[in-house]
Length: 172
Image (cartoon, rainbow, N blue to C red; front, side, top):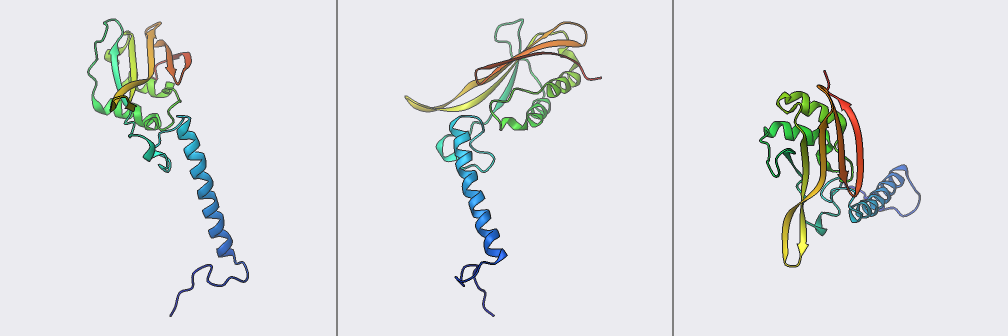
């Protein structure tokens, strides 16, 4: 019993050949799109196919929480809460998307000790620096929360040069 490859008979097009060529063409187009999105720093180069991962280090996004009342005071938070915040924001694959309001509401509902405290979330990424050659963790996005009532807060975030502002309430 011998197996014939899809293109072993050059005459005639079968549905199998058309589907195979279509999949190869779609894959090639996605590679070009992915590299374009990575070069514009819109997506993580190590995700969604990873074709841009060989151009840089893995950014390894990390979230840090600070109390805005005290300069440089990092607030200890359980890893599970920060991991959930990252998971609800698709692990920051889409680099220029702000932290979602629903993930903030969930985070603050699960951490009532932060109610009324002005907070600063900083999302950092590892960057490849060339002079001298090294990797360094640099801030990528900053989100500030200011409380306007018992259960309402204003937020402002800056990511990829854009500023997003809004107001929200805690989830009940």
